[in-house]
Length: 164
Image (cartoon, rainbow, N blue to C red; front, side, top):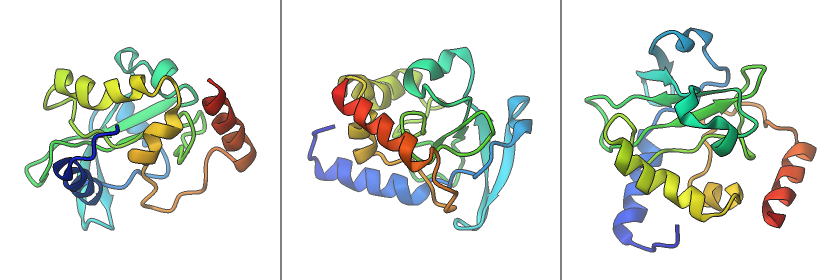
């Protein structure tokens, strides 16, 4: 998280440019199989898979999320990254706060072990303060979805994170 490597900064910039934008609503059909969703900003479709199962530990890493999606690697991908988007019980994108998803620098499809070291370990090292993690890897809201959670709840979550 504190690494000031030029390579890492350039890679993160490429990741943020390359990844699809999170859909504003969780596509319920993703619960059953991978779905293809058009991204107007990128001018093409991307494959997504549900990321809400028990192995994802939403209760730990995205405690207010009910559903999550993760983009799949494709031949057009210029990085090993995946977009991670999380949603509330009403299937609305969590654009901020402790339940929001964040870009994964290494997709679990490429290497679950490397994903753990590069994406999960830094979150753990932040000792529960998701705001530090999101400062470096901001949740995606490329489709300008409504702010979620609402301001008052978000500020309460932020205060809780700082006092953790």
